[in-house]
Image (cartoon, rainbow, N blue to C red; front, side, top):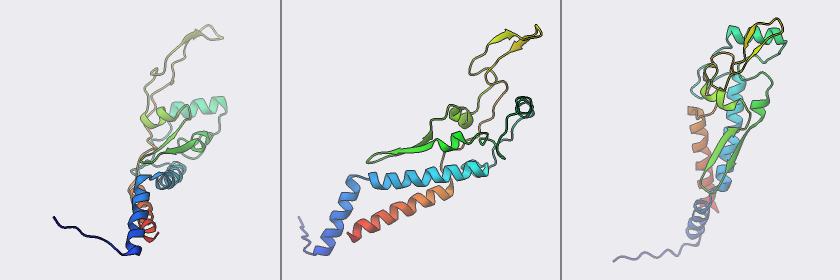
Length: 170
């Protein structure tokens, strides 16, 4: 058996710093979470998926309902009120980070929904006609806003590299 003993104080300190970092990555995970929240909000403002594709446009039916209800909306889908983007947040722990939105419409925007998927109700309108109150009123295409782009992956690698370099310098 071969035994190697290190007596280099600087190297021992660097390895101790690296060991401490690897025992609890919470600070790194928090930084990654902050980075991904900003990246997600930026993509939403640009109207793009993590892969760089533009969001599916609003349908003619949606635009007609918005006009009838006098609803104003932003220049790209997912920007009607801005609430969903403002509610993007992250949580983290010693070995993980999660990014998401607690906005009520977030899951439907991420995955899409077909007419009536969220329930339906029928009633008689003011003129006596039958009204279909399906929710949603028409198919909603998926507009994935959560996920990792190539730039996100690169940014995460930079954050990890910087953390490792700092731990080795400690």
